Length: 325
Ligand SMILES: NC(=O)c1ccc[n+]([C@@H]2O[C@H](COP(=O)([O-])OP(=O)(O)OC[C@H]3O[C@@H](n4cnc5c(N)ncnc54)[C@H](O)[C@@H]3O)[C@@H](O)[C@H]2O)c1
Image (tube, rainbow, N blue to C red; front, side, top):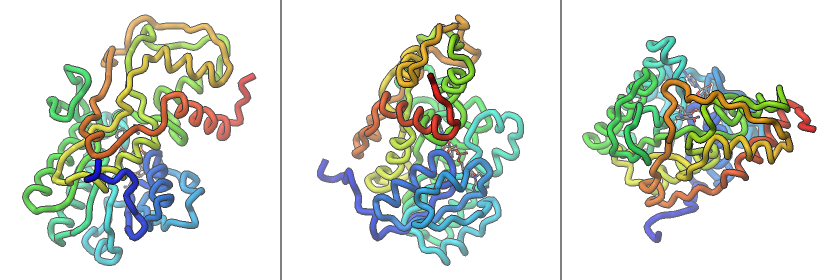
């Protein structure tokens, strides 16, 4: 462990987070501020929110900037940056299916222009790019490892993979210090979609019956958002940054049934479970992730499943005002 720092010193570090007002980005900004970094955020607030950063508003600089329009070389010359976390993106598959050109422009072309500016200016900093498990497509074996085949099945997955590949080649050819983190599905406070939020919204609407897709036995990796954010910091601090990619997950396995039961226990709601019986098309029975590459550079999930769910329920209560009993 001696070669790696669990708690790297960020106090003299100038950090830029694109997409820092978003779900994962805002948690990352909070951790960076707590670690002493000087943080700037570029965000259009398209899907992010200023309130996501309210706890650190006095400590950071937030610019409402569309990174598609940015002249990166000029920007980085005017704002020297040691570490750049590039998270701004269309973060979900469905919009990429509806408007692939929009997704391609933001997720791929904008990332390419950033990399090109880093190349031309011989940027000496470190960059971590937010990629996605979507690069794997319908992975054929579990747990998923980084060197498994990448066969994306959505424009979103293709864009992330193309950006990752350019990043890897630019790191190798031009000596830039770059890496990608392949986030698997994260959950936690400030996320208003996906399975944990959806189950809470269903429980709020109907305390008697809880509808569950499939038979509840589907196995998933539930990544708590703060651990997702922490992993990006660990990669920036400890990784070789030669263009490599890291799976980011919790590294543990829970079924949808276990998730639903935990949420019921935490909220005190006791509905009957109503199973649809069959999985939705494209929904695999088992989706788990091998995180040993990330663990080898010092990552350990810090928030366990129930703790993460309890914090998410507390946030849900605070924003909806729901009373469970
Ligand atoms: N949430 C997950 O489970 C997950 C899984 C895999 C990958 N990712 C990736 O992680 C990153 C963060 O995802 P998230 O869940 O926090 O999504 P998010 O939508 O909450 O965050 C994206 C942020 O980017 C900002 N943004 C969008 N377009 C912009 C532009 N043109 N210029 C500047 N800012 C812009 C948005 O306003 C938002 O704050 C994304 O790159 C996403 O693809 C997330």
